[in-house]
Image (tube, rainbow, N blue to C red; front, side, top):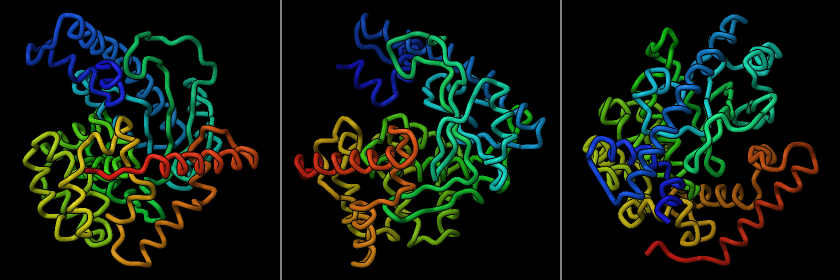
Length: 357
């Protein structure tokens, strides 16, 4: 049960590093397993960093100056700086309009990744000729290579509402390993928005909150608050507040608490009340049976029209959203299967409706 929980939340390598440093201990069996997670993650990330640099070079040689974002940007610092964190994929931002170029496909194919699927959010590339896992283990993301997601723009969307963060990520970039990456402020903002959507969709992981707490601890609360204010506080604070509130509660990071207090006057009252009663369990995969059906409109919407808009996008999401799931492939038949899967999930949520209390 412990191993399953650690894998669900992505904290195996993080806890393993603490065991190796002598900061925590459970028992010999668990300590040994956790220490192994760090070592396997180090192997995976070492190989991933080499692959990431190969991808950036291949794209650059064809005139595409890609920007690594999220975990890929962290990985450029060094493997040791993120050895505690598992990675599911590598995200790259390529300028809008160039993302669909055949040359992008050729550049990535040159380093062994071929186009697998296309959605409203990104183009996903997977190994052209996948072989057996290069790093084998029973923990988090044992396979390597893995997906590469190429974004023409970075948009986070929730039930009909969206926030395009591309300008924030491209403004005043930092430089790591001779490549441009988002500034610490932009990274903290992006992590907050991404983690908030994950929380509201019930797929949050402990590692998301650790990422966010570390990022805000690095840059402080005020730059993230000002970026949200510039985008329109009443419209966008609710994209940031859920994850910040959870990170403050679960990690104790003072910067998260400060940012939570700054944003609270600008989010719906229901969201503030929600933050006082919900825990990581309620918004993670582990707590999936405790979430009320169609619940998030009550804490997100400011008006009857917004609530109706959210319910409409929940009951009848657009084809682009259904297609972005990616489980059923592409084409009309896959789209029909995607809607079927969506409604089956909704029916299960109706059948397991409970309150957060």
